[in-house]
Length: 89
Image 1 (cartoon, rainbow, N blue to C red):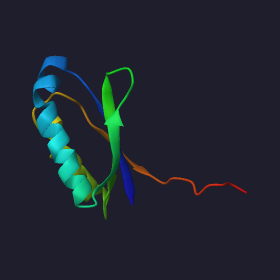
Image 2 (cartoon, rainbow, N blue to C red; image 1 turned 30 degrees about the vertical axis):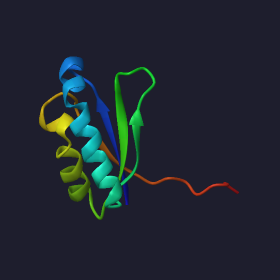
Image 3 (tube, helix red, strand yellow; image 1 turned 45 degrees about the vertical axis):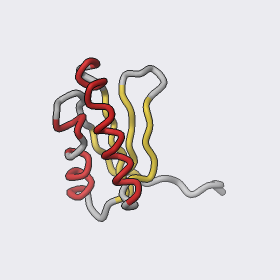
Image 4 (cartoon, helix red, strand yellow; image 1 turned 180 degrees about the horizontal axis):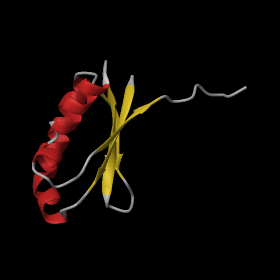
């Protein structure tokens, strides 16, 4: 299943400090096949990660292990996602 993590920034200064660790964490999970896509929102107020996991519990563990969450620079909203198969008929 796919899970979407919305990661709004709550502390810009702390987020900037932790960003390299966050990017390394996401990149490592991508190499493991656990992250499908990730990136910042254009308003610079946070970002989104799409996780591939067997369960909500696994996805939550992955998302909560992100340094920006561990250190409190961002908050987390995690939702299961069921993308449509396109084109629609």
